Image 1: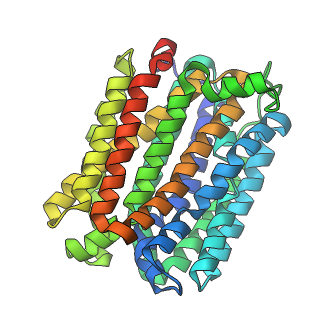
Image 2: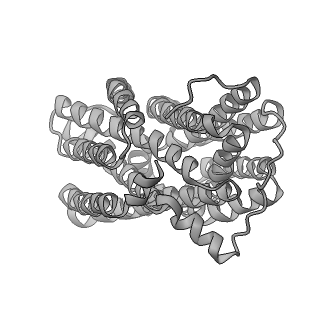
Length: 398
């Protein structure tokens, strides 16, 4: 449940700063989603599979480095890790902007992903806030990710119309620099914690607690599946909009804007409902079904109406889950392992990004849209089974 009392002045400043930081960082990373599959076709070596691999490449380094950097933030502090990560994001963005081959673009994406600061950022949010305010803080930051996702789908096509993918990557580098300003000049001094910084990932018992304690495992699995769906979706949706529906590329931004606005009431209902129930599994399962159903409708759309309905359902389910899942992790993770737990959570998220790009591109190349739908249906069945069978610890913890 969300605390009724307001944030303190320090909490308010910290949460707003971190939400802005998340929004700036994720805005740049999300802006390529509605563009990549279309613009990357012009580069040497482009196939559906190689485009999917390059699209998801940043997820590979993100997944590999989230746990080490989350652990490092437990040891040396959150801010040094965040500053280093934002610097790498800016460097990788400039490399991608200068690339003229798909391989060079993939290298830039890998460098972007090496700035793996999601775990340290979410752990810092929990460090700044009292226990009773933590869910509210996570919800606000989660909502900022949803806002950045919505803005990115609109701004990306607009920027690309001015300068193609290089312009989008250049703006991403600028946003990384703005994020550095937020960390250095806006965020308050990091508070001293009673047992923060004492966690050691080398401790096998504590690692097991961070991996599986209090139902955390199913939450990690859920964020993996959610971002796999997202990346797989955007290996195909831009082409569906252009080829199946006949929507010109310069009109894609308006379609995204309209459907994202249409999804807002559904997101609000789902997030509010989560706060009213003791057992989150039925609501999570319903949201998963809505997300996948919307994606399948959008992939098979042959009219503007069907495409709109599918995207509204997909965006409502995706954004609601993007808000709910990190809030649950922040509630269940022990204080001294929060950076580590958020690292595992973020690693699962970005491993899903990489897997979704590779799997989505490969499925499209081998089986077309029907092959992609079959893969997504199989994933959904496994996801729902996992939620129901292995979510009992989550229920006990809520």
